[in-house]
Image 1 (spheres, rainbow, N blue to C red):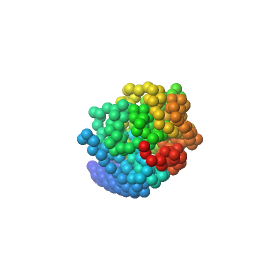
Image 2: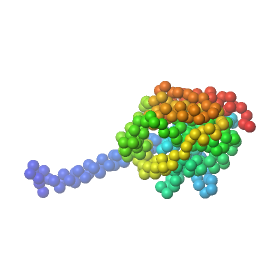
Image 3: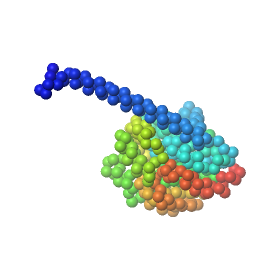
Image 4: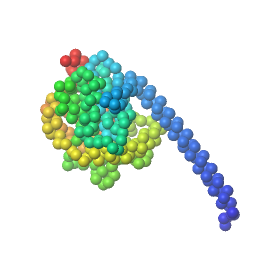
Length: 323
């Protein structure tokens, strides 16, 4: 059959299908190459950091974590919402080599099991994390958290002050000031930047969390975006659980006895820097650091700078014998 222009439409259709098939194979091949590059790069990054992927079985549940061996005291690192343990790799490399470092995945994140039937509220996340810290870390330790991980770290510090040598909070979550960050303005407008539906969404999210180009090779952006897209429904459930019940923080913070380092970037577009004042007012033994050019995840974007600052903070504690 020919159309009025004299073209064979049946042949055109078959040719179009063939081109689409070829294009699909090319895309699939590129995705496979990207997947392999990402997996290889991640493995090399872990080796450079001397961080080994490990698993712990506790009460029939598997907990995934990175561990860098060390003969000195232990530092535990807690990541933020929708991130995972590997966000700390550059930071781990920059810490003093003698420190033992442990970076677990939070409940439902990274390589931990995830289900839409679970509760991901702040209390549930902390109850999931506590047995891991008690069983795997053992001795007293230094605890560090970024964003949601900061909220978890503060919660644990208030519950078990006898376990901690020090606490460090990098833009911790949990406080909602009257000043709205760009992230929360988007959320109020009906567009949650944490819920990724496309590569473009993922790139916008990175611009929101970092003040400069993130230390990620652009060729693997699609790999990371696909993972976030696949978890979109899970992240939506997590967000709803976290927002449904907000526990007052004042009493939690005031119960913390560990020496605390509070770090906040002036350019944080996720959690407004105004929250820094609230945390500083309610922490009894706190040192506050402002990062003039810092975004929401300085431990990732400025790993060496933040790790060096943290190392100075714990210098008198990290290298002393544990008690």
